Image (tube, rainbow, N blue to C red; front, side, top):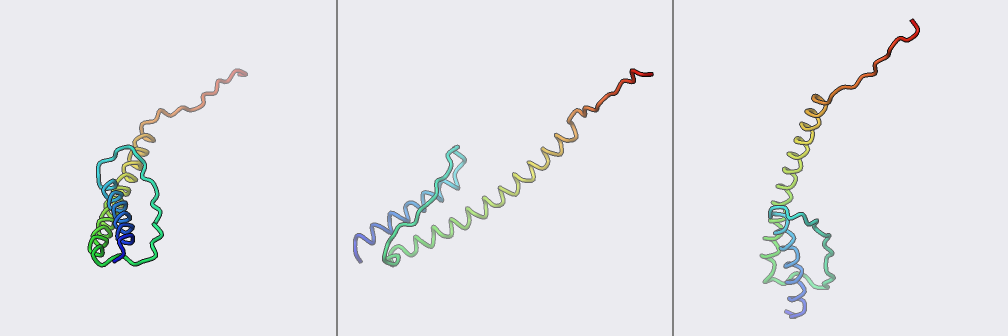
Length: 100
């Protein structure tokens, strides 16, 4: 196997693995950046296929967790909106009859 191809794929998998690690850690306040796939004109080397599959499975798991968390956050936001609407002091117009 060409060492350049192996090094390029290893680097690409390192980036993907780091991105999954960032998603599964407690929030740091940092906004994840976008990932640009590298231009590698060769398939994933056989010795890296298992690692690539492992990263793919971790990405799927992270996506499922984030989707569930998003649903929870939406429900919380809805409840907060309901509480705010129910406890908001209603201000109504008051008219004073000055003509009679």
